[in-house]
Image (cartoon, rainbow, N blue to C red):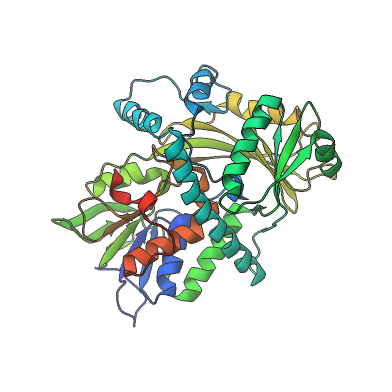
Length: 421
C-alpha cells in the first residue's frame, strides 16, 4: 500500500524526511508554493536536536565552526574532558577524514565567506521568527539582544574582530565596559573586562518554536506524519522511486533529506557518503529567580550560552564530536554549572534541574548542505547546520524550496551546494 496525503487529495509531490526545525521549515516553504508535501518523522516532530538547544536566534554568532586559530585551541582542549570542545581519543578513519577537511576549512578567506553566507540566512530568519511571533505564535520569542562577555583583554580584542566581521554584514554592536556590563546585567560577577552587545539578536524556546512552525506548515497544506521511520529506499538508477517506512510505503516525485545528525546513516540508504558528524551538547534548565540575567548572555571564553525565559533559565554548552553517542558524561555537565557560577549569580542549590543532551549535525566546513545531492536526479539535502539550525531554519527552508521549485534563489546557494561532498 502506498501512503500519501489524506483521502480525496493527490499524492505528494515532495517527501521531506526528518521532522526537526529544518525539515519542518522546508515543508512549510514548499507548501506555501502550492507543492503537495508530506513530511516523515521517525519519532515526534521537534524531538531531536531541535528540542532542547540553546534557543538562540543570533546573527552575531553565525560563524562556521572551523575558524582560524581553532585548531590550536582544540588541540589543548582535547586533553581535558571538561573543556568546551572535546574529541575522545579513538581510532576512526571516518573521523580522521572529517578532521582533515575541517583543518582545510580554517583559512581566513573560507571562514569569512562562510560567515557572510550564514549571517545572510540568519538575519532573514530572525525577522521571519519575529513575524511569526507578531502573528500570535507563542514560543517565547524575545528580541532583547545578546551580550558576549569576555574575561581577558586579549580575548576581548579578538572578540572585537569577530564583532566587526558580522557588522560588515549588517549586524550592529555596542561595546560595554566592565562597569557598564554590571550596571545593565547585575547578575554578572567575577573577573571580566567587558562585553560586546548585539541589540538585534533574539532568543526563544526551541521546542515550542518548532511546533509553531509545524502549525504554520499544516495550515499551508503540508501533511506531517510522525512515527514513520524510513528503513528502505527503492531506487532506479539515479532516481528515488519510493520509501519504505514503519507507516507504509511513500512515493513522490522529489525527496528531501533533512535528517540532522542522523544524515550519515540515513544517507547510506540513498547511496550517499555524507560527512555529517553529531556534536553533542548539553542544556540545563533551572527555575528562574529574581537575580537571573535579563537578556541572553554568551560567556565567550567558556563557550556557554545563557538564556532567560518566562519561568526558567536555559544554560547550554560544550561540543563533543561523538557521531551518534547519546551517553551523558557527568564531568562535562558539572563543568558547565561550575563554570557559570564563576561568572553569573545562581541559586545554590540550583533547584529542580532538567538536563538535556542533543547532537548538532556538523559538516567539515561548518556550512549546511542545501541543494540536490551528488549523482541524483530527485534527492535533495537540507542538513549539516551545526549550531545554526534554529537561527537559520526559515531561510534554509526558503532556499531549499526555491531550488526544488526552480525559482530564482533569494540567497546565494553556492556556499551551501549539497554536491560539494
